[in-house]
Image 1 (cartoon, chains in turn orange, brown):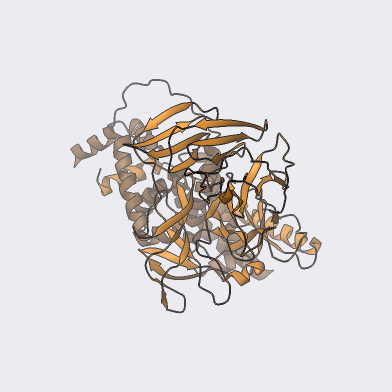
Image 2: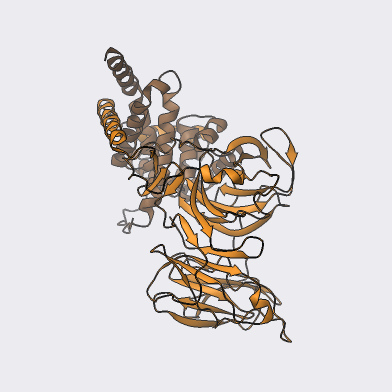
Length: 396
Length: 170
């Protein structure tokens, strides 16, 4: 099929299309929107300015207010909110790079509401109390190294769809053992633990997975009989990758039944260069993907300096990124190494990611634009003494 | 008031000249006339809202960008709900027939992802450069190239009858 023939086919396909006059109606609708905006502006609480809507239920409001007004009718998705912005500068591996504002400006970012994540996620819940029948939005494990000594793992916290954090008793899970009573200091929660629908979670053991059903509050053991290098959800199945004599990729139901086996590795998220170190989960939505990575090469900052060792959120294409959001270096504090694992896509324009530093947050980036938003603060842990693992359900 | 009336007249003049082209682009992007009209209507409304800022710039590009991006977002929301019944067997389509050729093209375009479809329509119908398509979609030029390659490959696979006919016509 030549380019010219394709042109002709496309032109032929729409050659007989005629239209009624849409312009007059569009002007009338725009006038009505202007009027409703003026009315909303008069009625709004002073200092609260709702400036944009992302999707049908997600609104962006300016930061610093705990009681945002309800959003007005949807406006252009390209409209910006006031506050710190990402700045476009340079490319990396041919991919355009945006630079996020420094961590200490995050509190001034406009707030994005309407996702299932609350403004504040408190990880201090302890001692059980997780009811049956909830759906989880996120699963955390505050990592205090207790499991290193063979004691039952603690610090597992569930964020329910009701916005409440619950302590979860995961003492049933055996910390990963290397024999002779030695335990590898790894958390039992991984970034992949929570199922996309928030109904199940798996917890890591040496040669098995413990699967928890939030609906019935029951556990199932998935005995793999071998060590594995990765476990993650593929829809409502758990995909386990292990390497023995051969590579094996098997998928299991939540009841522990194997329904698929392959010797091919699942598709990864590549680039921009092979030397970059990806981390955290790959989040996919339709034909978009996103994953955080530690960039191996040098990147040019907005002030023209070339820097190395930059963390970035890579997002866009299904298998490789179209664009990067780089995290600037800061003196005195700032984001941590591997600060920014991807949380997931909120819609086809917006990716959520963690920003880990002493005041950890979940942020949102309207991919390929300067627009950044704060979503949640993560509190109830002790920076410097503790860290945490987080796993999120699908938020789109 | 006079200024507003002048804006409205200028907008209507622009919309009158451009809406058919935008509708045709939207139809190629969606394959659905009603959906295409909705997309154009929304895009024109958004252009009207910003008419003073856009009038001296490039309202065409802005409108096209809204149509493409809204279509991709809308497709995601519809995807899980849409259940298409198996079509009745209508026999082998004849690419020499204009009607069958149209059906074949519709089916082939439907095999593309929304972004691949957008790349094909913007490159080969709207005749935009790779750089312009990249800017409109907010992606790198290399991505436009790779998506174009993938899209054309998938088009050929989805409509071999069409591809064969075209080869014979060359």
